Structure formats: C-alpha cells, structure tokens
Image (cartoon, rainbow, N blue to C red; front, top):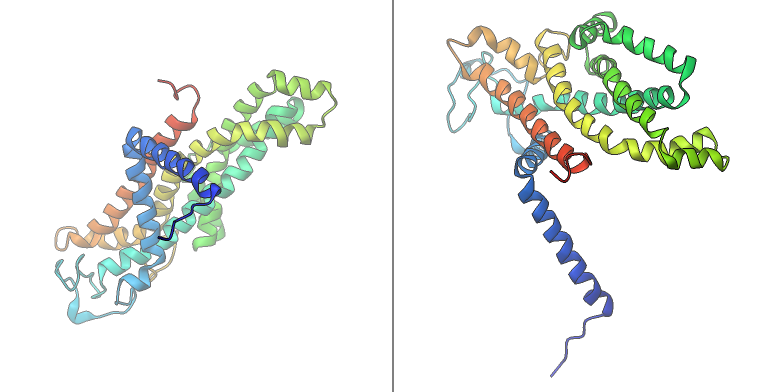
Length: 297
C-alpha cells in the first residue's frame, strides 16, 4: 500500500494555521458588530467596483416609457423619472462617494499626522505656527470649509477630494500632536536622544509606529464623516454633475418625488445610511482592539 508522507513543514504549519483561524473566529465573536460592519463595507465596495457585471442596464440611458416604475422583478429598486434603473444607479453611485471618501481620508491622515507629529516633537515656534494654522481651519465648521473650497475650485470628484481632505486634516493633526507630546516624554525616546539619534530617526522609528494604531482608529471614524461630507456636497450640487450617478445627487434629484415615488430618494439614502453605520461599527471594533486603555475592559 502506498503511504502518504507529509513534509515536516506541513506538520509545523497546520497547527499554526489552525490557531490563526481560531484567533480570527474569537475576534469575530468578540466584535460581532465590527465584523458585520467590515463585511458590509467590503460588500459595498465590491458591488460598486463590479457594477457593470452585476447589472445589465446603462446607468445614464434614458427610457421614458419605463419612468417611475415601482420596485418589481425587472427593476428591484424601481426606476427614476427618466426611466433609469435605480439599482444600477445605486451600484454606480457608490463609486464617486467611496473614491472621494477613501482618498480624502488617506490624504488627510498622512498630512495631519505629519503636521501633528512635527508640532508635538519639535515644539516651540514650530508648534505654535502649525497649531495656529490648524486653529484657523478649525474656526470654520468642517462642512462649511468643504463647501467654500469646492465653491472656489469648482465641482467634480478631484475638487471634492481636496475639499474633504482639508476639512479632515485638523482632526488628524490634533490627535497626532497630542500623542506625539506624550511620546516625547517616554523613556525610549529620551534614551534615543541620549545615544545621539537624530530627530528624523526618532520620529520614524519610535513616534510613527506608536502613532499608527490610534491614527487608524481615527481614520475609520473620519471615513464615516467623509462619506457623509461627499454625499452632502453632491446633494448641494457641488460634487459630480448629472447624469453621472452619485448617492447624494440621487437623493437631491429624488426629494421632489418623495410623495409620488418614495423609492427614488429612499434607496440611495439607505445606501448612505447603511454605509455610514457599517463604518462606525467597524471603527468601534478597531478602537476596542487597538486602544490599549480599552483592550482589557
């Protein structure tokens, strides 16, 4: 009889893989809401990316005979006043919102962390100058600041990304500065100074690795705000231009039909609400997992 031989590496790796799976299952059980939120967010992203594969309809093709059709099997979300399939437009409408949100949060996290880390580590005049600039930005409500920037630059996704980024930078800068100020007093930073480590080395090797977990948690929280901001800009006509589908723009166009065809503004509004809730649930789970003050509660 032929004997099945297992290599030593297979024997060693199998328990490790099993332990890793058990660890992930335990985490999913402890943070069920975060797991559901993360999976739903992934689902929304995949649906937006794969929109051409999921729907046979054109998101901007007008079909007047099919206008204002109630939800049915051919059109699960119904149709709008131009006969366009709402499910298709919701799938495509997530693209500008998600693109604006993810890129703006990423850019704001990088810029705000850099500003806050430099201000907290260098202190003195640099800290005063950078924080006064941040205070000026904070003097404007975030939504108003985003609206002013888009009004000055013009509509479109690139300008919306710039506007949302600027509105989120002060939050990241404040968080990074507070953390950097506390980290500069830690013994490992003092010891690095004592052995002659340069400022960039201390920032790169000691400050940034310790700043990363809380910044990730903050970025997740800001992602929900960015989705709301991006949708609000489109709702006000400052985002993408029609007929390009966008959740906020679809709610704006459908609000006058709320009594005659409720499904027109309802489904894009529901997409915004569920996405924001999913991101918030994911952020709560990441905070509980990454924040050392909450980890053992």
